[in-house]
Image (cartoon, rainbow, N blue to C red; front, side, top):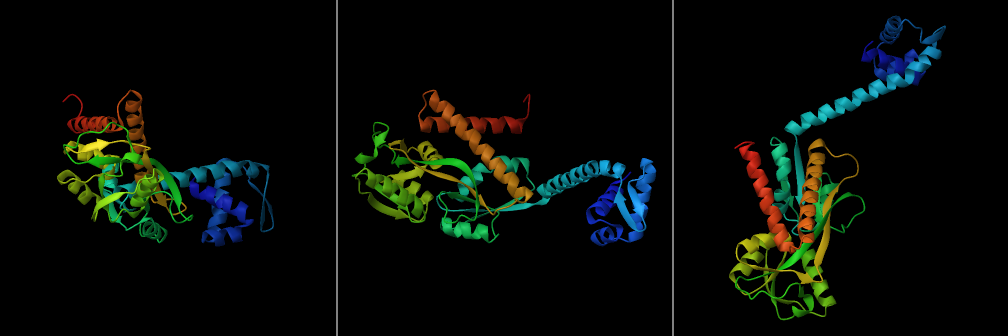
Length: 331
């Protein structure tokens, strides 16, 4: 018995005759008939009642239908898995980001993927905002889009990755305030904002105004890196995401948690339906990486660490794990 014989058998059953089965499979009727006869000889059973040119399933044939469908279904599933494995060796994935979910953040989160799939090409494109990003994903020019939520369309599927926390980053040698610092006390704190992170600026402004504070914006920079540079070299402060806040802390900045917290949900958007294997694997790896990171930070906080200290510890542990992996066991 071979797969082709089962395929011919099911085609005759589902299309109710040799002629229509042959048309569906685009093979000669003689091939169908020969395949069915060979299957019956190997099984030592007749599968059809033959009345003239018509074939009607007999009880033995009826018993074979579901097992045959399962065999062919398993074969198709195996072929899909192997095709996905081949594509993961030579494929690529195009990822869209926005200023609030910057390309360097995506690069940091993609480390586990690139270690597992070093042959996959990753192209990261940054767009001005959520609307432009979603348009690119809908148009198919990006398989995945990293964005804060909500998004300006209901036509994309979402993978939630967590909340992005914004912390107040103050210049080096600033006397550390009591933490958490109440937002209502920020009325006289000069701030620098990023011209590109408009959604983030709106969030900060809304949170401050809710506390009856008018933001004291003293500078505008084109991006977050320029924001952080001005903070490290000047007398202004900035609200930056946790990942950048830890980097600023290592360079001497004073990092402050606020009350209430400023946070926004973020994640991945993609077109409805299945992703290509490379994009699907990237999304899975990113979700796993961030879930593990967030769980470890939460564990450290539950043990009494501040958010900043927990994030610094998690980053240090992750760096040690990578170092041990590169060196290998026993080194």
